[in-house]
Each structure stands twice: as structure tokens, then as C-alpha cells.
Amino acid sequence: METISRRLERIRHKIAEAAIRSGRNPDAVKIVGVTKTVSPDRISEAVTAGLRILGENYIQESLAKIDALSSRDISWHFIGRLQSNKAKFAIRHFDLIHSVHSEKLATEINRQAAKNSRIQPVLIQVNTGQEATKSGVSPGDAVDLITRISGLENISVRGLMTMPPFFDAPENVRPFFRNTADLKKKIEDAGIDNVSMTELSMGMTGDYEAAVEEGATLVRIGTAIFGDRP
Image (cartoon, rainbow, N blue to C red; front, side):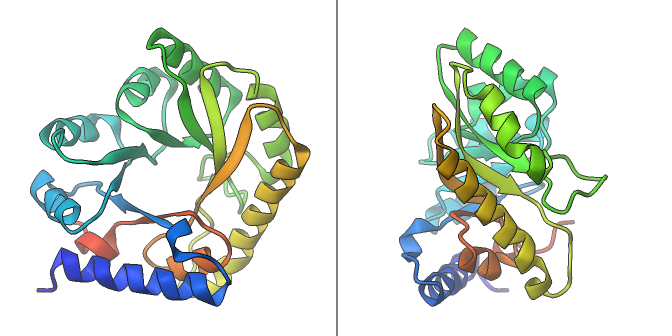
């Protein structure tokens, strides 16, 4: 069986090649290892191999892992759908929340962050494909949402996240990545106070090379690192 270390090495190589093809610095792209259902032992193996950012989808599942790996040099990102009543846990344990999709959720994160005397970095989730089954603000409403929440003192908008429609061919996903990158540029050009559009979270195991070519700074990869989930 191929080791996690070898898988990570191959992924880094592919990311570097994709970045160079698009005239980007490979160092501008970071891997978020998606650890949903992955045991702490296997996560630790990946950390030993150099993985430094871990992404979790569920608050309850993540807490035991965060505790078990508390001695490791790790940045935890929350990448799943976040309910407002779980915001208090998210701001205590996660360095970046990728999935803010509404003013209501942003306001609750801000309230909980203020209680803990911290400023919580967040990404705004954009429903690029405007799919009814997925969370996220529509592309046309993103600038308005970010403008409305930009005055919240205890959150910091750092960029966008998207989960485009699924296609077997990565090239079919490319237009959705490109549209999200264009939206990020539009928001940058709007010059909204207290908003820093430095991150673009998009791309997963099947399409991360196309995402990198279109401007991703964070790629969320699970299966290619840890193998198929049970």
C-alpha cells in the first residue's frame, strides 16, 4: 500500500506543476488535508509527512481529534456546513472557517468571537453553481453580503470558498473556478473596508490541478491523501 508520505509528495508535485503552468508561485498554494472519518493515528502520519493544515466537516467529530493532536504543529480549518448554534465551538478550535454563507451566521460568529476576545478569520462560501442542495451565497449577492458584514468587529473576511457542481471531467469544473476567481477580483476592486481577499478555497481530489490553475490558494484534499473513506 502506498504511504501517506508518498501520496503527499505526488500531490505537492502536481500542485507545483499546475501553478507553474499558470504563472504562479507554487508556494502560494496550501493543502488542506480533509480528515473527515480519518483516525488521529493516520492524521498524525500525515502531519509527520509535512501536512500542516487540517480541515474538518463536523464539530462533534473534530473535537476528539483536536485534543488528541494538541501537541502537533497544526492549523485547523472548519470546512463543513456550520450551524449557528455550533459557532461557539468553531471559534474556539478553528483558525479559519471556510463556510460562512449568511449574515445570520456571520453575526453569531462575531458574537461568539467577541465573548472570547478574538477576531475570527472567515471565508465566504459562494454557491457558484447555484445548486439547491448546497449552501452558499449566490454569486450575484456576494458583494452585498460582504459589505453588510464588513462592519462586524470580531470577524475578518479573508476570501471566498466554493464547492462547484460535480463532474467526472475536471475541465467541466474549470468555468466555475474561473467565475469564483473573477468574483474574488471584483470584491477586491470594490475596496470594502476591513475585507482582505487573500484566500480562494476551491478544488478537491478530482479537480485540484484545475483549481490551482484558476487561482486557488487553498485546495481541500482528502481521498488522494488518506484513501477512500469507509
